[in-house]
Length: 580
Ligand SMILES: *[C@@H]1O[C@H](CO)[C@@H](O)[C@H](O)[C@H]1NC(C)=O
Ligand SMILES: *[C@@H]1O[C@H](CO)[C@@H](O)[C@H](O)[C@H]1NC(C)=O
Ligand SMILES: *[C@@H]1O[C@H](CO)[C@@H](O)[C@H](O)[C@H]1NC(C)=O
Image 1 (cartoon, rainbow, N blue to C red):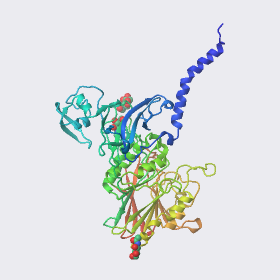
Image 2: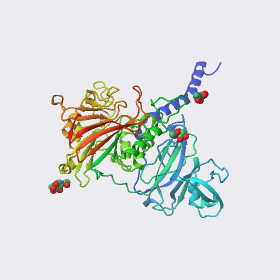
Image 3: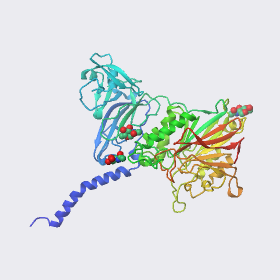
Image 4: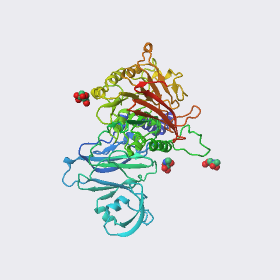
């Protein structure tokens, strides 16, 4: 006879067996359910802060994974949530300039090996030490070898290197951490000290922040490619661009709707034509090819992004996806203004965090907008006359949110709120005099993501395709009326990928419609988003403003034939919103 009844023993064994499963379950749940605000900290640009220590931290259970005491964690899993259990993070110690004691070393440079540990140094491009280190030690005599390298600018060049000894490298301050990362420590120097670090994911990752440097090769990790990025001394932000009608009296806007970028390559959804067996299709690369082609052809003065830049489901790191989406404009120095869609914040960052980042990027005109108004990204952008500070064109941007919060009463999508409409009515007030002083006819346009309910009033007077149901809110907050009163002649949205029409919505006092307004769709540009309805080729819409004739015209370009324009039409003629 045993001391414990057999039933108890069996139950005990079951519990013991179940315990690890339970732990993993709780862990996974916690990981998924913890609010973003707890689980994600944006790299903060503390005033005059420098990084004094770097370390990696690996853990198996997130609940037991607190940062080392005194360290700040960059809350980005280096495994990008790809491993079932197990996370790795980079952690750092920061210190203010003033708090540095004596000759306390700080981080001066970073480099990543392009091969695993200890392969022999050969002349074939496989170096024991990263090129950044060899560059840093140029002039210290050692064995010479010639290597073809790809520089930071992507160009291949032949360089003669002298191979330093391990001792010489150590004396220069370089120390080796895990995953091929080398860190150079040394005494504080205002211009050399690294003030902030970050990581971006995937071979297609782009660093677009002012003065940030992305290391050319990824960490030696057997998961997704992870690229280190860093910035030195708190560089001055670039000033916001000022929009001006050009010397020919024209201004061209490219609308980019629904890019649907992923953190990694992205998968093509409903590609046109359908893929052949075994044909592969990387959504983001294909979208970028189209976008870059149209930018080369059109060279717009402004790009307007009307939401769903990021496909949240495929963006465990939203920042990487957003940078990839904006790189074509930033590298060309084209100003851009962005509103959020319903998918942008379904990745690792909230609407607030996304706009906080985008607001500060080079050439960005996007703004979070007043905090007391519903939504993130309600803002006004003036286009000035070519020769004065008078305002020729007013552009209004609104956040159209996501899903209704009163689903029982008003199912479907959320609507533009009363306080947004109040703000909208006076958004241009700071420029009132500049608008009144403008010698020609002042024109206005509005851009956002989710269509207005009036997009449903489809009729004869339109140009373009109507292929899918209009996913407008079921509740009408009458934004249409406010836009009408403001004299907005053209509104353009995204959201419905397979509709690309412009609808002439005539004034109708009985139905609360003041002024004629063209209600347009951009038509989706991204291969990562849906595009069905019999096959819908991705497209981009352009607007041209002529300040001499006070006209606004529009046309589109297709991914399959970007050289040709189609469905060109005049929307506003001599200041009057017309159907022609
Ligand atoms: C897609 O992913 C693979 C594997 O990570 C990578 O080699 C490639 O460069 C990526 N991009 C494209 C456009 O194929
Ligand atoms: C397609 O891929 C499969 C599996 O990789 C392979 O067995 C098959 O031969 C391929 N078919 C063609 C037509 O290339
Ligand atoms: C508008 O025009 C008036 C009269 O010429 C001038 O006094 C005023 O300074 C102008 N306002 C602005 C903001 O340019």
